[in-house]
Length: 333
Image (cartoon, rainbow, N blue to C red; front, side):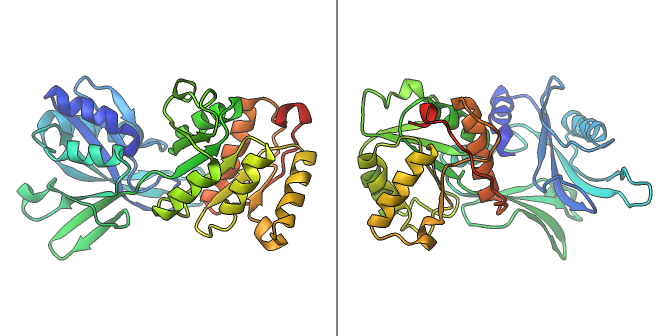
């Protein structure tokens, strides 16, 4: 639901009624995640999706029916397998009307998501008392996103953790391109540079821009408990007085999920020499992804952003079959 929060708010504020469909349980071979949602607005427009062969249209019709009738229902859809000898997947989808009358608490949910605070929504998707179905409870407690079966109810728990954070050190064209790519992947992006004339918020729309020494800013975040295993750090500027103190701090933070640095082979060789001179051994240096990014032949800032974002996503998902990028000196310097 996170990706359609703004669309849901628009419908809520309109005073009209749309329909909301949510995958609450899956079975069999499917890549569709539990919690995937689709909004059908009062005019029949679709936002978000429940994409599966032969299911999306049926889910749309059921959601449109919920909007028109005000009825809430749990549907089971079967997705045929492309392999005739294999069984299909099963999707349980809850459909409900969506409006300020049906979900009065929704603005509070949207506010918490926008503020990157944890919020969990409990929704009754089955109960012997029809009036109970569709009731919502909001909490800030941490839960898994799952369907919980109780003796008298089935309750879908939809948990929204704070978005992962990417901190880009250096304000240049590579930072701007990576900021765009990372935000598409759901990251909160911060750009940090010592130079106020380069760290211009207008050059990095959608990102927080901080003017500070990188190592000092990273120490501040760490002391405030704002660095965790979902945090990514990418260094895109190669001045030794800028990056070496920063990497000295970053490599000693065990909770950071990803540390990457752009640079040509000669830049990286100099970087390793400086870090080894500072006491780093091979085990700690192995945490550094440098040159950062998967080898897709990237040359431009936009291409490099794709390569780095791919490696960042792989690290986030525990899939680090990485390939090293070799950047030309003219690009990385």
